[in-house]
Amino acid sequence: MNEKMTATTNQLQAELIASDEFTEIKAAYDALKKSLDDYKLFNDFQDAQQNLQQKQMQGVQPTQDEIQNIQAIAGKMRESQLISELMTKEKALSQLLSDINETVTKPISDLYKS
Image (cartoon, rainbow, N blue to C red; front, top):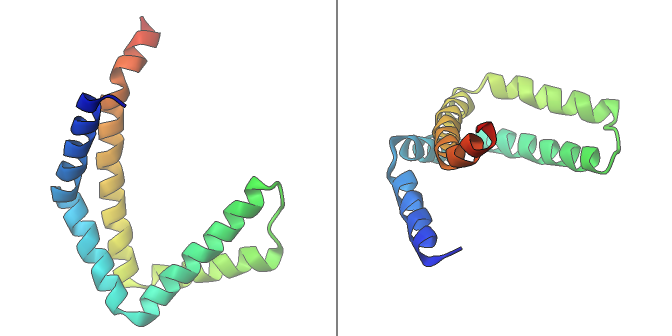
C-alpha cells in the first residue's frame, strides 16, 4: 500500500475508534465482561460457532449433538440482556462498516457498470 493510502486507512481507523458505534460496542462488551455467567455463555457460543465453521470448511457435517448444543447456547443467549445489547451494538457497527465499504469500493462497482 502506498504511503498516502496507509495514512488514509490509519485516519479511518482513528475515526472508527472515535465513532459512537465503536464507543457503544466497547461499552456493551465491557459491561458483558463484568457478568461472569453471561461472558462465559458468550465465549461458549463463540467457541461452538468456530468449531462448526471449521468443520464446514473441511467439508465435515456437524453432529446432531453439536447442533443441539449450539442451539441451546443460542437460546440462553437470547435471555441475556447484556448479550442482546452487545448484538444490537454489533449490528450498528456492522452497518457503519458496510457503508464505509460501499463508499470505498464504489469506483470499482462503477467501473464494471460502465
